[in-house]
Length: 166
Image (tube, rainbow, N blue to C red; front, side):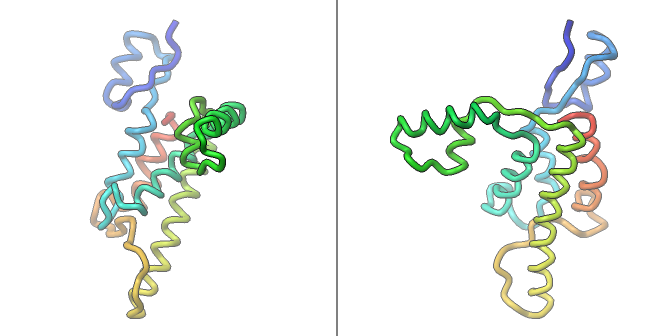
């Protein structure tokens, strides 16, 4: 019996798959496509900008954590490859097994990430209104007329995706 399916278009295929495999089937969105949905909220920066990449990495960490033993094995493998002090990014890339917190905990952690980056944006906007040089671009879209503004994304679609399982 099939219990869970992870797809890249869960909203489109959920009903179809449940008709085939039964109403108890969980149809979840894969991590990559969940994170791609956040790209629409990014303002002037392109998704490859270091600030955008940092945001996406933080969202990824909010969705899944490396299993402790797997992380230790990854560090050991990196040391055999000559990396005596591997960076956290190198360890995460080498780690093969991750665990996912509950959807409620994921939602809380993603909201915390968004709030941290919104605070960074607010600090830069205050500098700009005072005529001071800003240190980094504004990350999110705040214009209420834009359907992809961060306030709508945080309260609507992205949260729903997490509650139903990213």
